[in-house]
Length: 312
Length: 312
Image 1: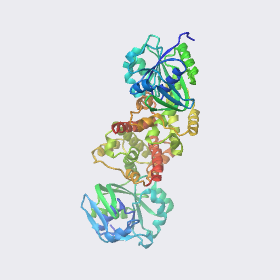
Image 2 (image 1 turned 90 degrees about the horizontal axis):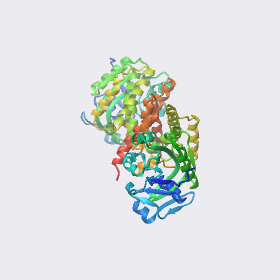
Image 3 (image 1 turned 135 degrees about the vertical axis):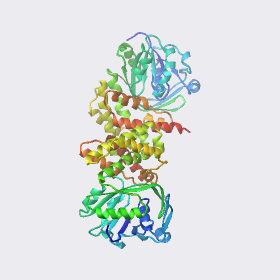
Image 4 (image 1 turned 90 degrees about the vertical axis):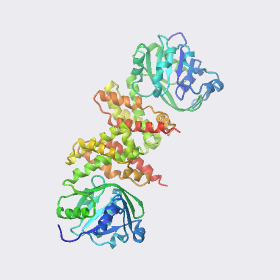
């Protein structure tokens, strides 16, 4: 363990960043929040979190509206939607020291590599949030279920720092797993995300509605098995039985609107690129056609185009 | 040519049967129409056809509401939706003589075989209507575009009778092709129907909207090539270049709502079984997985269930 207290930045204070950053700050960590449209509310009313594990309010979060005003940090937690990742070239530099670790708490495949191409010296980790939470108002997050986070190093060398982050999170009441293999961890999450996020949009249905229909269950399973097969091209080790585990777990979940469904309902751009296009394209480069995933990608791209254009 | 004038029955007097039967009757053929909900209007106001080739009215069609009242016929044209084919066991027997030819003017695969299992001695042909027409009111059809019909014998032995039917149709102004190979003809139509019917429902879009989106065009092409590949298992001979021909032809068509989209919009059951489930299942029995077609089938089954349940 390092002796020094870590300084955190949270980029993207919505359902994910607001919750995890909020918990860390509540537990006494030094957390600096970048807000966008919610800045004034965060300053005037604080960051409010309703949580199944207990509600709390941070009356005076260290809030910023511009990264230029933020201090360099030890850890930058990026919890933007991946559709915003183009902005990282501007957002990150003011926050970086040579030792800074950037943790991408995002869904999809390929974000870490893209970031490392932009910042070749950067220390990068990826994280998967297993949480049901929504932003229900400005600087106001509602945490509905679950809450664990899995973190894995991208280039495999920040073990001490990651341990310290995990320790801070544990102390803040966040169940945390350090994944020995980020690739496997990312693809395990894709096994769930690819069928449920996409089909919830294409079929305009919550998880429980999807699970009630045997043909859709069969399709979900086909997609899961296709994702598992693709994952092996990248060195992930996921047994086929994981598909049935995920189906069973989802069957037991309370009705849930996946994040992509919420994006669709609010006419926001959907994360098609990193969740679908990138896995399909890279698997294809390895000679494997993810036929059903690609079809879902194609349907989502059409939906995305029309949905964003029809924003009221 | 036979010397005797043929007696026709038309079962299902909607957009297809009303148009083709109406043209035959207008040209002097002996056509007996089975109406369902439109019977009283057909009797009181006649059968009305608006057509790009000239509007016409049959003021006194030979209309029936019950097959028991109809005479045995030489030719029975079945232009019901395939979701109604279960009713053929009741509808056909009163119309049959030993020499009767039943022509299924329907979309899909496997209807002729199902019918031959029910009526082993029956003479059967299949027909594909290449027409844009809609029923716009009771006993009132609007013919918008195209109009040709392709007919092929199912068991290959009614050549003389089919020639006579083709002759009657030609005389009635209906462009008709006698297909030497019904299997190839059916699958050629499926090459168009499988992508456009299903995607028009899943993406709630007309053909022109689908064609405007390059990813959807790529998906349509993938589906077409999958259908062509499957068709070979059944002995059809369709070159791959047919996919690009169909794409090009559709690009040039005026905006069109495929029949399945209309069924969806009116909360009627969709023809998923013969258009999707049967081809997928039979191809699978031959060891070929129609992965994208199957996915479309699964999405349509879900849509069908919810759509029919939500009928206002």
